[in-house]
Length: 135
Length: 135
Image (cartoon, rainbow over all chains, first blue to last red; front, top):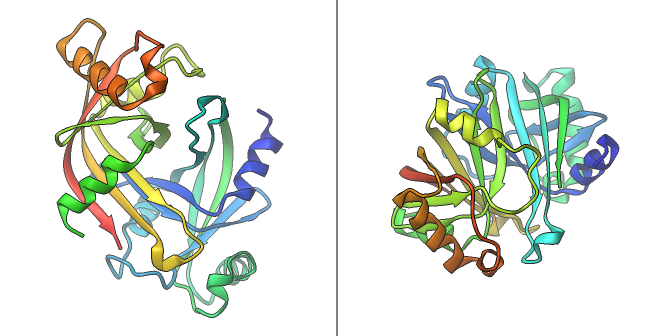
């Protein structure tokens, strides 16, 4: 699968899984809504209920910026299965920054659910360095 | 969400995301088919095409047994979103071992796609230590 195809598949997904690494070295997973800004994937802490006022993904990224993203499709016909993984480096953008404003604009454009529910919390921008697609 | 509910949701999923940690400390993601053996989740290297004869998930687990699993459901109605995360410790079971035979039996019972495609490669048994469910 070509890089451009991998990016197209990712662009059509509505949700992606974000893997980070915790301070103790164990992996951490959470699904995120996202938008693409060229080959940077942006996301933000939003109004959906959170288990904590300080979501773990942010602390993890602050200490270890390398993250992995995965989008997949399930089908009982296994000849139709596919997944796309994107590995990259994340940085955080706080409300008030240019990076945050850009993520906010892209996310609102992509999700109707965001349009009436500003503002967002911390934004995450992940510069994709490597795509892996299967099969 | 109670632990029993989290386990029920997981039991109904056909696929789950497995996060491991690479030797260089970065996270790694791959979707896996699985079966539950009480509170142990089992999976195996199967006949689906692989990018490598030595899938990275196995090397990662051999060096760092702590893994994270996530099942989620997407819905444009965000009041219906949910995800379940299970953190645990993985161990590998090679073909010929009792652990492998058990995983093989459970996986074949769960997936019609496996019944005509023996044998499996290395099996993975993940003892779930903690459930996290959202919302």
